Image (cartoon, rainbow, N blue to C red; front, side, top):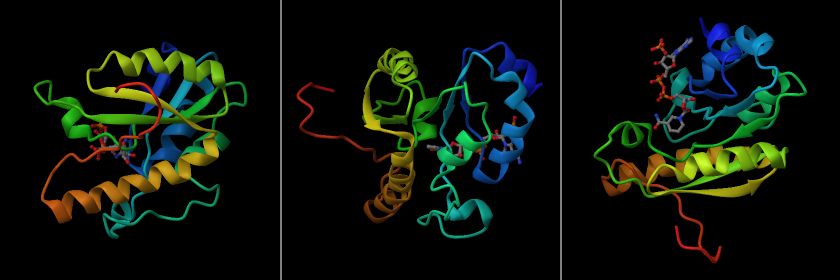
Length: 167
Ligand SMILES: NC(=O)c1ccc[n+]([C@@H]2O[C@H](COP(=O)([O-])OP(=O)(O)OC[C@H]3O[C@@H](n4cnc5c(N)ncnc54)[C@H](OP(=O)(O)O)[C@@H]3O)[C@@H](O)[C@H]2O)c1
């Protein structure tokens, strides 16, 4: 089912827990020709029984770079949406307030994603750099989980200042 769905999509968004990332990618990589892969995976230690506020070391540097390794070379891989609460995103009555840091090595693919992010009120796409920067962006999610806990909130997010344009 996933390979058939991926074959029909020009943008494939990977939203499975870290332990499932490799298996899903192996199952769909034959269907990704002509698509852009958007990886949202945060390698949280909690997915393997560890702490929610820790990220696991990934040999490639990040979950996104692991995805790059398992994806056909011609398929651009972007890392995005790591710092946005999935619960808030699914709640159509929620007010979203978050920058979407986008990492990737294909400028044209990033330009495809920017307008889609802007379609969602309260979100601003920010080009955060190459795919290797994803290791930092993924880690920020553990920071946000810690901030949520310490401040008794559910959906803290990230805003980058100094970009010269209003969110
Ligand atoms: N939740 C957030 O706020 C948030 C924010 C930023 C990034 N992320 C990242 O987004 C990804 C998904 O997070 P989530 O909170 O949505 O996770 P989740 O609810 O635990 O899982 C999402 C979906 O992944 C599928 N799945 C789970 N285990 C699987 C397995 N072993 N094999 C195949 N598919 C499996 C399931 O699909 P089916 O129901 O079809 O089985 C499930 O509904 C994670 O990598 C997470 O780090 C999450």
